[in-house]
Amino acid sequence: MTGPEAGELLRADSPARDRALLFARIAIALYLLELLLNLTRPHIAPDEPTLSIFHRLPGSSGSFGRLLSMPKAVFWTVVAGIVLGAALQVYARITRPEGRRDAVLVWATVAVLLGPFSLLALTVVSSYLGDALLCVPGTVFVLAVLHLGQRFGRVPLTLLLAAFGWGALIVFGLGRAFSGLALGTLGGYLLDRPKTGGSPTDALNALSGQVHDQYRAIDLLLVHLFAVNALAVAAGVLVLLLLLRHRVVDAMTGMVLGAAVGLGYTFVESVLFIRLFGSLGFINGVTGGFEYWIRQSIGLLGGPVLFGALLGGSLALALTGPRERRVPTVLFGLAISIGGSAGTEALAGWLSKVTHDHMSGGGAFDTLIVSPLLWLLPQLPFAAVAVLLLVAAARARGATARTAIAARVVPGGPITPVEAHFLSDPSLRLWTLAATWKRHGPAAALALYRLQSAQYDLASSDPQEGEPLRAKVMRLKASGPNRTAVPS
Amino acid sequence: MERGTGPAIERQVRLVAVGAAVGLAALVAGLAINLSGANDPPAPKLPTFPQLPGKAPGQAPGPVPSVPQLPSNFPTDLPTDMPSNFPTGVPSMPNMPSMPSFPSVPGGAP
Picture 1 (cartoon, chains in turn brown, purple):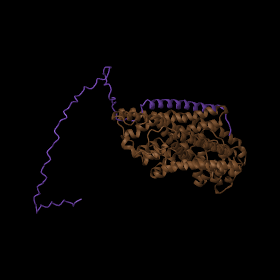
Picture 2 (spheres, one colour):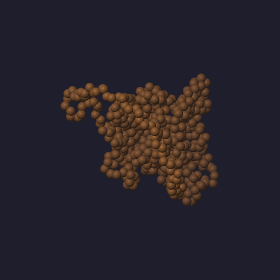
Picture 3 (cartoon, helix red, strand yellow):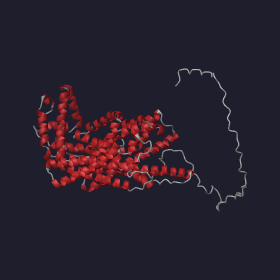
Picture 4 (cartoon, chains in turn red, brown):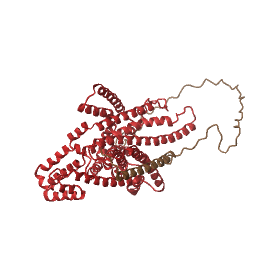
């Protein structure tokens, strides 16, 4: 799908637009609720600012400060975006625009409401550009696997990149913004106010208790973070699935989109954690190099990518499955994502702690084998479910695609009977491409690849919406010197 | 968007349900581990300090013994008339016309 076609899709699809605006409103309402809870929290220190996100611990500048705090400029930009978004909605209510103008106004409102949260991710990436560049190869590799690994019809590359961008900018930004507030709120309710005038022993005992309470607050904060992340991932995947509503959508479509969203989130999080643990290695022994190894190499398909794929697959099933199963299926997806993310994080940490009580850490064997294995071990049941779901979805897609291709066969038309034979069998299609490359060169193979992709798009599209795609296929068939390479 | 109701969809929904059950189990296990403190980072243990005044471990119940009364009848008629005619003339330092020079620091002075 080209850029102008994608733009046309965004303008023409009212359900996706309406849902995007609804999700943006819900996100802002929840953010305002978080702000209110933070404003009304019990203050544990006399000089605490009104909003805890403005509180800076001594020496918490740099990476650590960026992880825990929200820059004031970003916060006020978010507030300005909320005000401007509200004004745009009032303007739309008064003027009641229609058609293209309405579409532009709605998407502009969504961008104004949610866009400022992306500044948090952009700050991280721009601050540590070198680390971000290191993460590019692995990320591009997984994106290519997601794009090229789909059988039959593919998610358009534009939407795949949109999913990646949603994860990197919006999911990361919302997660950090919400968690920054929640950390202060939880601390206000869980931590005791420091007592003044006590003896030194009283102060030491209180400090010990405060450290314990701080750990509990962080435990709850992690669950909160994963819940916010899962809801943000779900909102993005649902909007993208609705943009594809004129095509055949199945669990594999949702898994690809969800994995791309998770990959975007992983990209920014990896940059932050590589830098953060690179700075704190003298305390906990973990280095930035180890974080790169575990997040951008061996574990790149785990964590947010794995849980994003399972959540996306669940949402696609909810949209395409029986209507009475819609709500339970969405809840299943959220349970996998929230429970899996929070549970595996804790279990992996615990397994690592128990193991390293009995063996020394930090060596080559530990770094390359033991620690990655301990991180991946709790995720194995989820990976098994994902593989089984992928296999089941691929089989179902194959059956659906063969039926759809057969229904579009017209002698001399966009899909001829011979072409249908090749299109229905992915391995035969691959062989055709290789043979065309060998006999006629890469240009002919590329032309054939484009033609077959357009035929798949046509076969998986809604019959009422397929006229432009039919014209595109006929145009590709008629064009250029590669015509001889196309089986007919 | 087309809706499917076949056995293939049912099978996939069942798989997702299994995943949800595993997810909830993982969440419960993770919370139990975290909230029990089993996952807390290792930190030097602070000794538990007894409250003062208080009872030492193993001390029999009962009233805290009172501190013995110290004598308070110290003599107050100490002499206060200290001598005030100390000599104030300080002897002058001897004259040293030629002090030996310090050897130079190798590499130059900082």
